[in-house]
Image 1 (tube, rainbow, N blue to C red):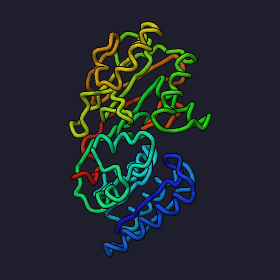
Image 2: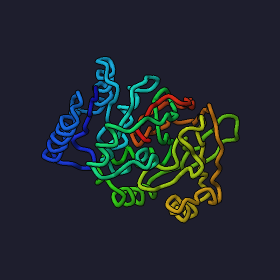
Image 3: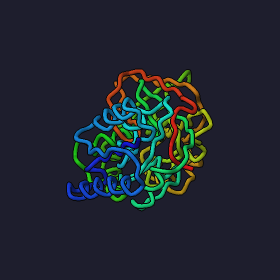
Length: 289
């Protein structure tokens, strides 16, 4: 059985677009004589609940049609199960879908999600919250929260505008990562994939199936240096920027004198003054072969 879970507002879609997506999904299942259900989410967290219910009903494949947040909710319900995650990318960043080089057109993505063989990938947790692409503390979490708060226009242009605006408002904090000396950092990123999405590559060496997370620290030596360093995210050369350090970890901890805002795959979460991070090797089956 296949369950298809559609976020009706992913990518700024209208309700009429969401209905057409649901009709297309149902028609595709019918054309292949595949048993399954199609669901539209109604609120944050609903995709996770729908995916968990599908698993309990015996689904062998659950498809997330939406952006990184929708994929995260569905995938979180499938970890450590044999159920296969399918992805139809319809968000603004589509970080995991881009990393897996999944089809981007709807018809091709739908066929691929329903039929492709699985590839087993790793995941991570931060403060016991799952992430499959990126978990970040600092400025990227601040921008994610600003989008949530202000209803910013999604897509690369919207993120660039929001990032430029918030860069002049944001104050970097001092972080203690594991046993290292306190560092004033713009970003403390734990990466399971190379990118945030939209081709912004924060961790060029990250791999989905190596059992490790790439820890990237973007030390802020000056705001001007930060401004000149940010374009390197789109050239794959962030590792050459002064003040950027990269290493791999299986477990880590981050401490700060202030409660830390963090994000999991673009979804902002308010944390405390101490966060624990862990890599979880080979926990999710993704339709990617």
